[in-house]
Amino acid sequence: MGKNAIISVFDKTNLDLIANFLIKKKYTIYSTGGTSEYLKGINIPHIEISKYTKQKEILDGRVKTLHPKIFGGLLGTDSQKHQKEQKSQGIVIFDILVINLYPFEETVRRTKDKSKIIEMIDIGGHSLIRAAVKNYDHTIPITNPSDYKNFMKAFPLRQTQRKIFAKKALQQIANYDNAIFNWFDGNTKDEYELRYGENPHQNARALVNNDKFAQLSGDKRLSYNNLLDLDAAVKIAYGVNTKNNICAIIKHNTPCGAAIGKIQTECYDKALAGDPLSAFGGIVSFNKKISKKTAKLLLKNFYEVISAPSYEKEALNILKTKKNLRVIKVKKINQKFEERSFFGGTLIQDTNNKKTSVENINGENKLSVEKINFFVNILKNIKSNAIALFDENSLISQSGGQTSRVDALQNCLYKFNLRHKFRRLKKAYLFSDAFFPFVDSLSIIKKQKIKIETYAPMGSRNDPDIRRHIKKHKLNFFKLSERHFKH
Image (cartoon, rainbow, N blue to C red; front, side, top):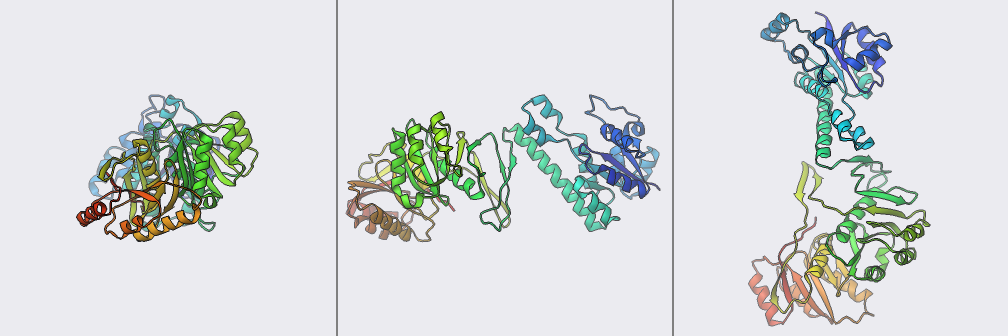
C-alpha cells in the first residue's frame, strides 16, 4: 500500500525541504489551491485535492478540504471495518499532514478591517489538525515549518515522537482559538519583547494589549519589573472615579507615596513627601493630563517611568529631555479578572474592585466616601499583612509583606515617626487589610502621640473583646466592609 501526505500551508517557509523529502521517501502528495500552485512552481509532483475529491473549491475557497474523502483518510484506524469502508469509498489513507493556519493574529495586528480579519479564521486547516491529532497513531501532524528538519531527522518516528508532534499541533490550535476568542471579546494581545525577567538570568516575555498603553518617549522599552510596577501604579491612579487629581508613586510593586487633591502639582508634592527616599527610581502615575508645571517638578527627581492618560504638549517636550525616562500614555482600565500561575496550574479570580462601606464601632467617621475608597485602593495594593497610615489626603507611611500584623503595625509607625517628626498632624487615619485578632495592636495605637483613627475589617472570634477594648479606651474605630488580602 502506498504512502500518502497532505500538504496545505499558508506559510511556505522551508516547504521545498519537506516536499522533496516526502517525494524521496516515496510519498504521494495531495495539496490544496495556493499550496498546489507553489508546488508546481518548484516542480514537486502532486495531486490536487479537488481532483481527488471531485469537488471544486467553493465559496471563494472557504470550503476546499471539508470532505469525507479527506477526513476519512485522516481518521481511519487498522480495524477491518474502517479499512473496508475506506476501500469501498475510494478513500486514500493519509499518513502525514503538513499544515499551518491562516495568520489570524498577524492580520489583527495589521488591520482593523473586520471582513479581512474574519476571512483569516481558518476552518478546514483547524479541522484537519484536530482529525490528525485524534488519530496520531496513524497520521502525523506537522504544523510548524521550524519542525520540518526535526521530523526529517527523526524519520521514521517512534510512538513517543508522534505524540510530541500531536501535542504541538493541539497547542497551536488551542492558541489559535484563544486568539480568535480574544478578538471577539475585544481583548487582543501581542508579544512585547523583554530583555529578561525579574532578574537578568531569567528569560521572559509579555503578552500585552497594545491599545491599552503607548510609549511616547524614552530610549529603552519597559522591563518586566517596570510593567509590574506600572500595573500597581495605574490601579491606584485610576482606581477611584473622581474629579480630583491622583498621583501614585510605586517602588518594587508597593506604593511608597500617593495623594489626592484639586491641584496636580500639590498632589505630586504630597505623594513624594510620603517617602522621598523610596521614591528614587520609582514609577509615578497620574489620573489626569500632566501639566507643564508638573513635568518640571518631575524632572527634579530620578524616575524610571511616568504614566498618565495624556500630556500637555509642553509637558511632553520637557519629559522627553530625559532620554532614560520612559513616558507612557495609559488608557483608563477596566480589568474584570486577574490570573497568576502556581505549581499545579493557573489561579483566576475577579479583580478586587468592590467599593468599601464603613460602620461606626466607636466615634464618628469624618472621611468622605471618596477618601475612604482612595485609601482602601492604596491599602489593597500593599502585600499582606498590610498597614497604611494617611493624613487628610495622602499616604504618609506603610508596611506590608509582614507575617505578623503587630510587626506590620510597629514598622509602619516606626517609619512614620522617623520620617515625619517635623509634621504637626492633629490626626492620622490607619487602615488595616484584615481584622485585629487581639487587643495588642490596639494598645500600640493608643500609645501614639498623635490621635489615630482606625479603619479595619472585623470577623475574629475575639470581636467582642476587641469592641469592649475600643469603647473602654475611647478609640475611634470604624469597621471596613471587606477584607483586602494581597499575596
